[in-house]
Image 1 (cartoon, rainbow, N blue to C red):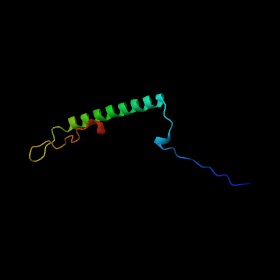
Image 2 (image 1 turned 30 degrees about the vertical axis):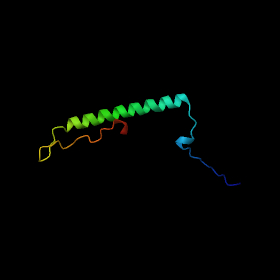
Image 3 (image 1 turned 60 degrees about the vertical axis):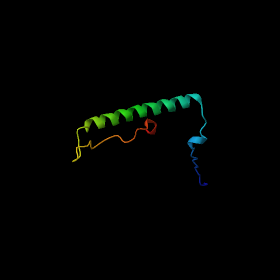
Image 4 (image 1 turned 90 degrees about the vertical axis):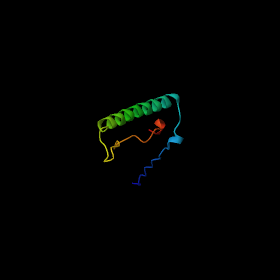
Length: 70
């Protein structure tokens, strides 16, 4: 019997066919993740807002002001 070769090709995101439904779903998922991350960050900062350095400054702060970063 001959040896069978299985070849799997990877598809890069830019090579995937784009359709409207896929783009809507992708954007919706990104929005959900962005909202969840914002909530987690806000909750974390709230939990540690009273933690101070020896100089009296807030120890944990949010340094990134660019909301598109997340």
